[in-house]
Length: 340
Image 1 (cartoon, rainbow, N blue to C red):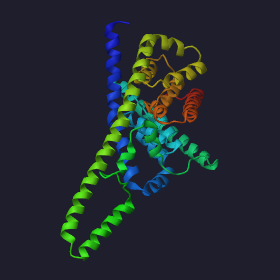
Image 2 (image 1 turned 135 degrees about the vertical axis):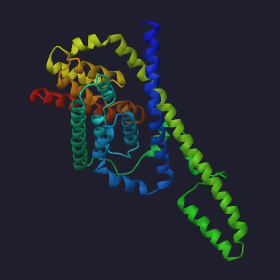
Image 3 (image 1 turned 90 degrees about the vertical axis):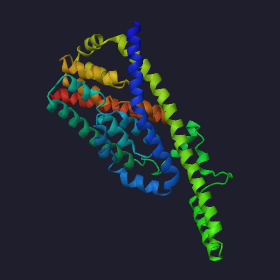
Image 4 (image 1 turned 180 degrees about the vertical axis):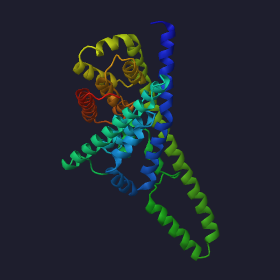
């Protein structure tokens, strides 16, 4: 492998990783703010979004940006979204398929037909997953577990709830403080006490905001570093294998090609979706294997899931399920003779 190729792989890995940072940071920032300011409203938000989550997730996944799958992996690890929503985002995520179609000046109808198939598949499968899990009483407890995610990352999120004097902050304490200020005002001490209270409250709020931002930055840095290392390794693997070798393996047997294409789609690197799309456009890959690979190729969603979700068995089950869905739907496309 020449120094030029090594540098290309390194730059591609840096580029792919940097693209995810805004999504990861905003996700963690929203989660931290939700955990420490929303209180009981968090569960109500989750309950309202639970049934429609897979529909919204599939539509977001269709946008030409793999950052949404990374967001979904993180949100599922904190149980802010359901398993069906996570699956719908992964199946609908287009990753690098759209740029490759545009670069080859292919008819937009072909591209939108593939995206539409992925979106519908994501919606239906995601909704089915949530229905089955609820019927089996395995859909979770309906509560967000953001605090547990913070504890696993050792980001000292607990400091968010402490003021300068080490006292614990809570909504009840805030209400009590306001009552004290009102009482002081009634006794003619409104100006002095209220002025001090405003300053104290403003300082406390500023500290909480800083701790929320700092915790989000810590989470983002940890996950970003992990993504970069894995992306770099798989980038070298794909480069070493070569597109010609991949085409030769995938062009042998239809069923085996579908299973192998889905396996390649699991590689958490944009090179996987690029290779599958290019082989399809060149005529080296049939529609069935192509669809299997692109359904499974959910950007960095599964990679982030493995980094943030502590239940490894759960991660493996979700990954295996996505793989099986991709293979089955790929075989259906091939069996029905669907051409995009």
